[in-house]
Amino acid sequence: MKVLTVNVGRPRAVEYTDARSGTTGIDKRPVDGPVQVTDPGPKGEGGSGLSGDAVCDLRHHGGTDQAVYAFAREDLDAWERELGRPLANGTFGENLTTSGVDVTGAKVGERWRIGDSLVLEVTCGRIPCRVFAGWLGEKGWVRRFTRNGASGAYLRVIEPGEIRAGDLVEVVHRPDHEVTVGMAFRAETTERALLPQVLAAGEALHAELLKNARAYVAKYGPAEPEVAGEPGAA
Image 1 (cartoon, helix red, strand yellow):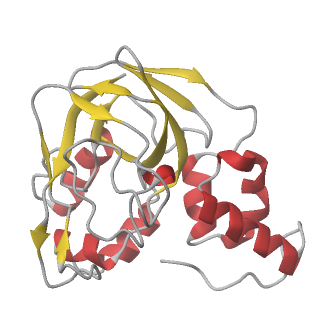
Image 2 (image 1 turned 45 degrees about the horizontal axis):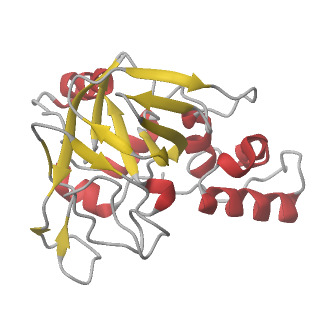
């Protein structure tokens, strides 16, 4: 398991962003040499965990629980076949394009050591937005991406360090619960009745997902309701 490329973005002016600046950092490109990765700070204040990487809409992106975004090359390859077009590393706005890592099957709270010192912790999947859809230019993209279920994973920084292309990825901690990135993503989008189950991941969950799951249980109870709430970003 390894990192194929480390990808960072510069601000790019587009018409489809909600950022007040009118720019987005979704255009990630592979970089040579080491990149420093640190905790960027709370959402709304901190951006990307990667040095030199732009996050233009701090209301919805960046911060401690979304410091780093990883996406599997294997899932990009599957989308290449479906869309009939090449997808370079970084095309989905990911900071890390991985090889041999089961990103969708990773558990919330799972920790990855990358390179000599960096340790990251999985927090949740990536919810597609209109900027992502505008960037890809594919009809019905938000719905298609959501139904596919391979969301990629957001990670927080546990131990800062440098990262570069070719670094090995080692899973150094895997929790006992069964809450995977894929389950958490479905709970946030198409299968909200799963929200009580994701609470098994506890404080390792992305803070907003933890809040939403607790609110759901407070409203419906821990059992699946007869009528689940409206789907999320499906």
